[in-house]
View 1: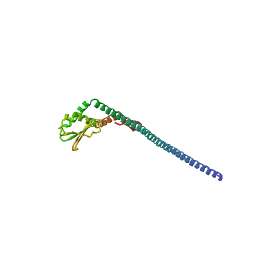
View 2: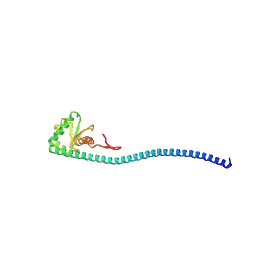
View 3: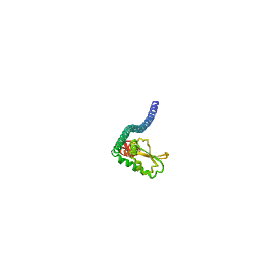
View 4: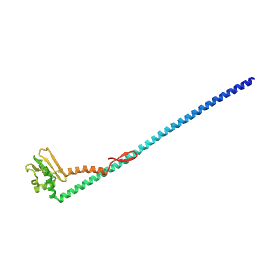
Length: 216
């Protein structure tokens, strides 16, 4: 065998080995590319889920802000209307009381006397009966104190009238107790009950993601 043939055989063998190495490298490269592609897909999927959650949370946050503003406006309107209704009813009630007192003065005086007499059995010390200006003059003129079931020595009219639509106050001489049966006090108690009923008629709303709920 000639030297040329020897070199040719060697070159052929080297080429064969190179081909094998190239095939191995290409195979490794292919697997590496496939691995990278798979990992990239996984990462993209994870990133997409993160992005989706971020956008979802952002949308929920923005929606809640919007609903909070809307609900706040609704509740403010409800509160305003509720107060208007209560105030209008109170004004109407006061107007009707004044009208009834004026149109039935004697019946009203008997009503006051009957209410005072409810407390008479528990009174055993000196007291002053406090009335508004109109009722004070009426009691003096008609001597209504005589119709009250309390010893004359224990009861007297306070000559200083109080500011009230009607009713009375019983005040002990030593200031140890006061019985407040003024219409103003009674109306204020009624206002509290009316407010509670108004709350049932006009509920308050709160935010819940995706919906509005009524507070029980």
